[in-house]
Image 1: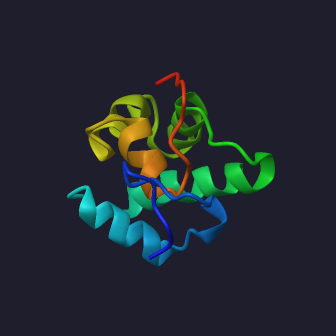
Image 2: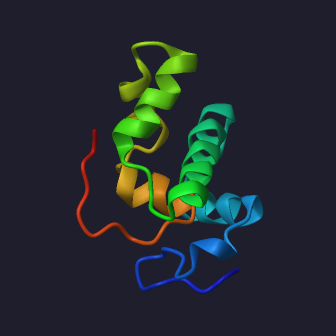
Length: 102
């Protein structure tokens, strides 16, 4: 497992792998399914392109393309303790300082 900060976020997002995601999700009590992976992979692509974590609204927009208008609620069903607290952590992002939840 790569180095984590005191709250369990990766110190270096470049060290993220899908295996790391599975372990971080397990620690959060989440069994990753297809919708989780769709959101996480989108977040990783966004990070690789922009070198910053995607705001929740971008992930919601992405999920809406596949899931329809219930995507916002689905994101919060997938990560019940919040986008920054779980989705960002599992996707290997650093802890966000300030965040819009979409």
